[in-house]
Image (cartoon, rainbow over all chains, first blue to last red; front, top):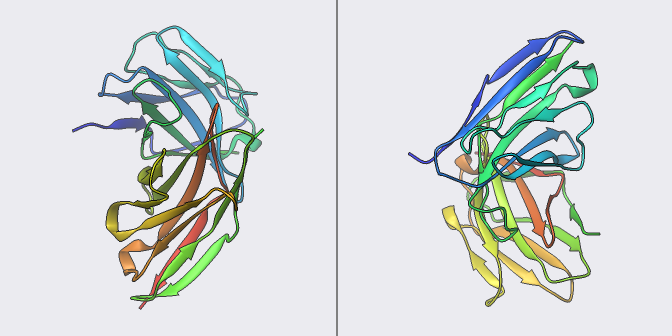
Length: 114
Length: 110
């Protein structure tokens, strides 16, 4: 089954404790992206990757890092989480990143930073 | 720069009644338009999209949307909703990049 898999589903952490949210897709997609979803703000893009070793900032990249060492994986790293990063996070992928393509989304990671 | 405005943040509706979710956008170039749905505790999934051609687009689960270039709108409609349509709906616009609206929460009641 074609899917985007995120882990963990829920995460509670404390300020400053480094964490990683994993994302993997099994569709051989070139493009992957991370979004955060906040009430009243919709989805905002954090980082995206057009292919292996090619990453770029989205609209709200501050406080986040990503890497794309393999085509299928695109982890999101919070080196020093802060409470304003409490949010619902989604990983997404598409075939090549063109804006006319369908995005496939993971089930989300609800992060709480205390 | 483009922007996407979903005009209603919450839409309560009774089962079997029609529903319309409004989406307006601004962009200086031609755009692609999408509606995504997020069911409780799930990721977003594509309902329908407009790329070109007929301005009336039909999607999954009985939804349809109409592209109106002069009014820069892409409203989503369903003639008769079910309890299972309770979800959050996102309009998205793509020109050089894809931007999402703030979302509309639809709650269907019996």
